[in-house]
Amino acid sequence: MRRQDPWPWTPGLSPLTPEQVVEMLIAASRQGVGHHVLTLNLDIYRHLAYLTAPHAQKLRSSYTLLLADGMPLVWGAALAGRPVPGRVTGADLLPILTRAALSAGLHVHYTGGPPGAAEGAAAAVIPEGRCSGRLSTSAFRLARDPADPCFREAAGSILADRPDVVFAAYGFPKQDHLGVAVRDLDPSSTIIGCGASLEFAAGMVRRAPAALQRTGLEWVFRLGTDPGRLGRRYLVEDMPVLVPLLRDAVRARRQPSEGRINR
Image (tube, rainbow, N blue to C red):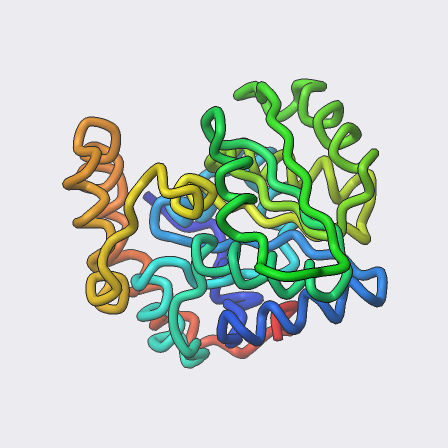
């Protein structure tokens, strides 16, 4: 496999903590500025860093905030000379950003996940007491082809409700193509691809213990809970990319720094 350019070390992963990300996104939303947020793990990196298809290139250029979801990205950031304080996962962002946004009077929208996930997550995450914001949910059938009109149709339906922050749980790359469609129609909206985060929040799927999350071994726990689906992805497809990722990070450290979009 041959890398096409130094992405993601240029423009770089955001050096923000989860709490700082929440503060930044809420402040941006109040100013009418939206973001397409990517929580980057090794599997998504494998797709975006090596694929040359037009849709992959469009996705890479669409993100306005890159966050290190997987520990290999945290290690890579350090090797590239652009360290980040730690992981920022979609599962971590979903509850804290939702609660902060609702308390700030913003409208949050959950879309995707298996039946009942969005509604279950909403019931679990909504803060106790009164808040001036609103939380809504939806679900759509999205195609594999990024050119399918279903993405623009789903984006239009979501935006008709005028959300400020959208969490999309369709898995990569569908949730990311939906993000492109949402931002094409309304750049002031923020959309975050969150994978299984709705299922975690709803209690439908268990997350790894905190100790495994901190040490970068959450994937081992997830592999044990769903080996049939995740075995090939983690062990056959993703593992061979780890060394090239870290090697590219070291090379990026030696190259002149370019302007970043993530602060």
